[in-house]
Amino acid sequence: MSATQATLVPRITLNNGALIPQLGFGVFQVPNVETEAAVSAALEAGYRSIDTAAIYGNEEGVGRALAASGIARDELFITSKLWNSDQGTATTAAAFELSLEKLGLEALDLYLIHWPAPATDLYLESWEALEGIAASGRSRAIGVSNFLPTQLERIIALGGTVPAVNQVELHPALQQAETVAFNRAHGIATEAWSPLAQGAMLSNPVIARLAEEIGRTPAQVILRWHLQQGRIVIPKSVTPARIAENLAVFDFELPAAALAEVDALDVAAGAGRVGPHPAEFNG
Ligand SMILES: NC(=O)C1=CN([C@@H]2O[C@H](COP(=O)(O)OP(=O)(O)OC[C@H]3O[C@@H](n4cnc5c(N)ncnc54)[C@H](OP(=O)(O)O)[C@@H]3O)[C@@H](O)[C@H]2O)C=CC1
Ligand SMILES: O=C(O)C(=O)[C@@H](O)[C@H](O)C(=O)CO
Image (cartoon, rainbow, N blue to C red; front, top):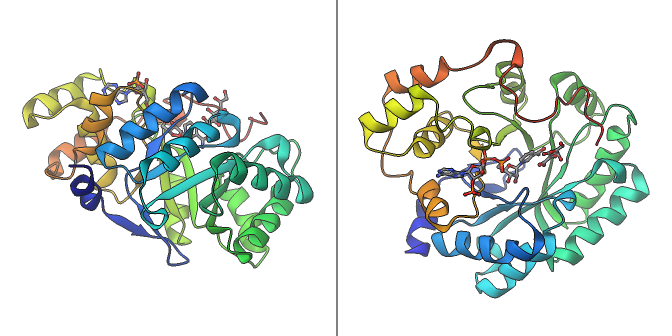
């Protein structure tokens, strides 16, 4: 079952050639002691990509699940993130080592700067530290999270590595057209965090009606909408039935009319946001 489901998840080719599963498993707000069980359930269901972060405090739980799974390392795609207070040259290197140690891994697949944190304005030197990590082979790819186009422009202007991924809040109520277009124009893959708006979009009447018409669940309708636009998604659940449900989205497609109905749910002026705004959030 799990191996079969895993093979159904398409891989997206990042700008350095690394392959990332288009659908992964997020663990924000999962307590460390509960994380091993949640990640084990996800791996058993067929997920092979796990998204964690130092600030989540659950890298050890993720690591325990990975070790217990017996799944070959090269079948897994593990992402972690540099927290805001660790930005800077030496601190980035130390934070990365600690994440690796907690995860029990020799290398990550993707390491992200978690937020631009404009108040300290350290993300350019942090980016150069990530480039060093990538050059050492200890992260197959590097990227950013919550970066606005103006902030990405400054990274690109350094003339070095273009981020492979920009992980941003993205769901039907916050579609981030400008950031998505910028990412696409620069070969940066867009990864949607809170793809279900932390559950808030599941009771939306349009989503509920489409789910009824198609014979799928609201979460599956939203995840298909993301996938059919080529985005990477990382839904989170600690509920085994939902973990399986969220992965069972590769045997149907939304018709164009349904995609357009979901597109129309975007809320003007970014007012559908459920998380912090990157221009203001410093952690
Ligand atoms: N880079 C960044 O700044 C951020 C990154 N992230 C990443 O993105 C991941 C996903 O985002 P997250 O904020 O967790 O929110 P999601 O949009 O994934 O929603 C998670 C919520 O939806 C519920 N849920 C999940 N699946 C279903 C389902 N099929 N039916 C009904 N309810 C469901 C979960 O409940 P339950 O668990 O109880 O089943 C949980 O309450 C995070 O876990 C994290 O890895 C998130 C925020 C910021
Ligand atoms: O979950 C994450 O990855 C985040 O960075 C945010 O959710 C953030 O930590 C937050 O919730 C601040 O209120």
